Image (cartoon, rainbow, N blue to C red; front, side, top):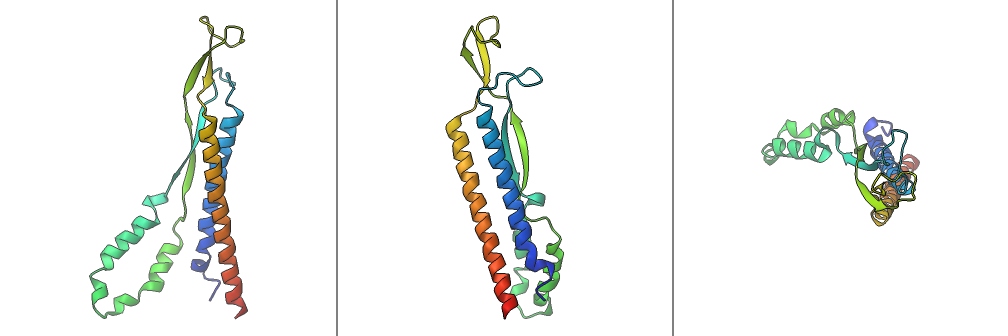
Length: 167
């Protein structure tokens, strides 16, 4: 039946991917907006934010590799154990799918000589976050394209399920 959870795992994967790229895009735009922020509420320059993506539990590809290695010998002979596909899908259906994204702060500063600036130290240097606008724009473009690719995958899955239901 089409309402089985395994058919909707593509939605969980793409939702997690969309969220990951949304957070990456947000971090890059926040960095660009605060490139000239010399002081935050705690008195330090703005800390650069980076989106770090990682797969939960080592990732689906590692689970697949372990399963493949475990079953490789069994596939060479006709056996009822070869028919455990649905049971295996049920075991994997409840697993977290897609990347987990955390935002890390990086304390990187650059000094700029401006003795007239109100936040200048006694030597006349102002501490700015070391934000490279070109790198941040590259991160934004990359996150945007990956976000669009996730939306395309989501639309394709929706269309496939819709056409399946029409049969």
